[in-house]
Length: 348
Length: 163
Image (cartoon, chains in turn blue, yellow):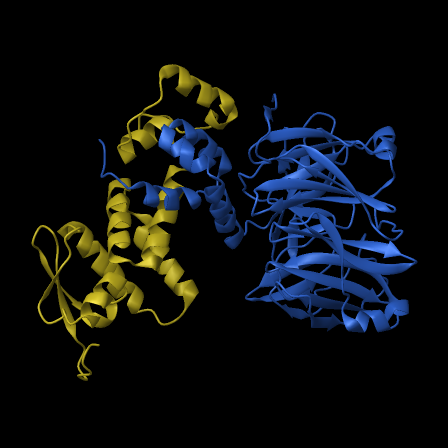
């Protein structure tokens, strides 16, 4: 029996709360107007916001670890991680490393040595929708770092490659390449890259310039990489500080690092929209910590967060913490994918 | 503004099928629509709610009383809402989402629409069309093409013969 006619504004609200992307894609077949709602960029944005506001605490391991089952899916619950038996399958053929995540879209590379050295073949993939797109860079330069960025205003996805003295931008919407000078000589930090995307639209990296840590970000409106001022205290303590890393805390950029002299982890949060840092916390008495390689995560417990690492005990209570970046990337229920391009569904 | 009287004010609400309900003003003004009427000085008489039937209004009032009895504790409110909605069937939820929208009650609107979304998750396209009263305006070819595009999403769907 047909029930009351629910107006389309309310249908839109209901659908934005349907976290399962699989169900949403299926319901495109309900009618033309449902297809229109579910395909609308604004709906996709609202849906992601709704998923982000009730976090699933699911994270993807960056590496398949040579299993053919896919990327391991990990659920963080309290100070315990559940490696479990979950995997995200149907990976684009031949790709086994996640380099970057933005709005649920992943930038993938292949593990093979040859591809790593040349670093020219990449795939964009949304595991929720199973859409994939392949990308071959034009440039043969040594890649220092890379990332994806979503431009909310134009609806374009941009892929950024940072080379030693230059950087290249690829626009998914307009299918163009652009190369610009960095104005300095930079080196990368780590195999899978340092970058993190905050709020879906600004991408940050940690680079090394003349043996000093440098924060940069990509301004997608003018296609430029700019320097982000470090927290003041960090510039002074520079010689004692090692192992920088970034995280997304409640939608803001967080920088944390290890102070060798004090044996402590220090943490700052950048205020939204402006370039000022606020010191959040210092956690003392941590021996021998390499933030690049140690599994460190921040888990929220009863509105407070506990800093936890499997090799250490829960160290100290923190103020609210959200998402961790390092060996894992967030797994989001997202309908995002670069628009204006043909997508290919993967054979199971 | 409502007059300060010391004793709790009671409002009379009238559904579109002419049922009358008494409800404490403090609970009723969870509805922005009702609050506006009260502030405009309509509280003296009966407040007519032309878009809500008696059965749904009774349910909404149960919710208003239940949720306003809980002090400012978001966890407890959430578990009340979950329990309140747990035994409602689709038709009731659909009536409630329309009522919550008309009465402008954002907390009920959020909870009911999330509940409907949860009910829909494993359902088939046919189930959705029937329950929402939606006419399939695709040609058979168009429908086949849309389904083919996301073939894998039709795996693991509940069978279609339930209510």
